Length: 169
Image (cartoon, rainbow, N blue to C red; front, side, top):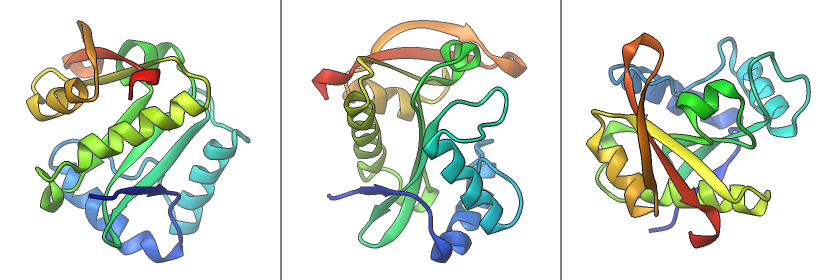
């Protein structure tokens, strides 16, 4: 299976908005910016380029995961950690659309994201997931994640925290 990660483009709006609606049922925000598609893409580009980043945010790459020409998910690769990300968000956030699950896409997305961070000089990568999300915990462990602890996050949600040695992926 081949998965490609890339920035969103003009033709991706309808597929991304559909995935945003579908993943809302999992309380996951596929789109991390609001507004018109042009505004969303501009926000993604600013964070990717590290320019005019909003307070509380860090330079990051919000990339679509493409398999066989179809958007199957997305990943947020945070180039550095702030206090919030260190506590509960981690370096990487990823999601796979419901119709594309259980095909190995999440594992490949996470592997590619860790490799991206390794190329940026990040040696240890923090990845978190809800304590109840056994599928995500399995993906993280498959990619070399070493469990550190559980912490209570916003809304009282319990989060698992894992560290991945970026050189090992």
